[in-house]
Length: 418
Image (cartoon, rainbow, N blue to C red; front, side, top):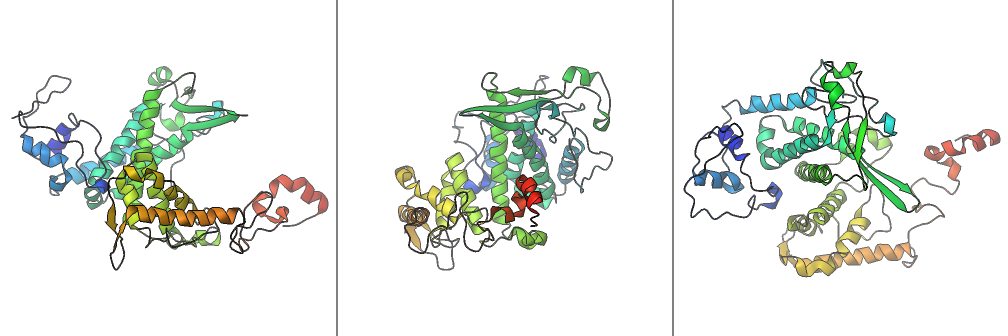
């Protein structure tokens, strides 16, 4: 049976979401096949699909024996055109590298009536409405495809396009999730629909020429929507797995690739603290041991247990990740593995608990520095900000150019420049 035929059939039978390739585990708990000799598949129009041999299903679902893509087939072309279609459905301000050149900016006022920015995302089918639930499911499935078949997608030359398609969706969902605080009470809102399906379906026009309503609809505490918020959660979670694997596979500093940022936000600490930081947050979100294993195996090589910090910033994440790791020492009894091998030139084994204790030691050092208990290795403080002696911040707050606008009248009256 051809790969593409099997793939289309298996869409109907996957019991539940698989683990990411990073985890090196079966997609799901093994099924007892002993009493099964064949499987019949049915679609909504009652058309019977071909019978499958159980071994074929088993080989497909377990990545160790995954069925390879036949590169001589039309799969690469189909994949390319599918991602091309995503670009044709984009809403918002289109990027410079937009391949569908007959599309232009559209929906730039989405969210304006509610006072929020809902520009972006994807239009649904052939209309100009943005439905949150099917859009979220689409991005979840696209992320799943990259997780399972990232190598094949890269081999087809479409990996970057797939990541861009995922990001276009997740950027929108980040906007659609808002938090409004009124004193202590917090109002959490998720916008799930932009546009009006009834009027839109009766008005055939390009997104660039829309004249129909762009009313926004939301779910919140009083008007819940667990289904759409659950699917959006799946979208963000699956996208985070894709992004983590991408960052770990293609390692390097962003300011070496995008040199213009060096004049503003040069990366002094390198990328290794960010990868440990990401792994620990993913572990907290998923409870998957492989992310914790990543943070432990790379703890020494990446500096997680070697740097004693008195700084925590957008660049230097070591103190933050050390604190997160130290909080896991209480949970160690639940960790299923006890020894591992450090990833470095001379591999050496060490107990997981011991590494977590070293993380905790570094975290305690940072906390002591915040309490002014580390002699000359303390965090420098002012009334408003924590700063180090070499970060360009002085006690004359008006000299910080990015914060000068609130003081504009005073600066004008005093004729202060800078």
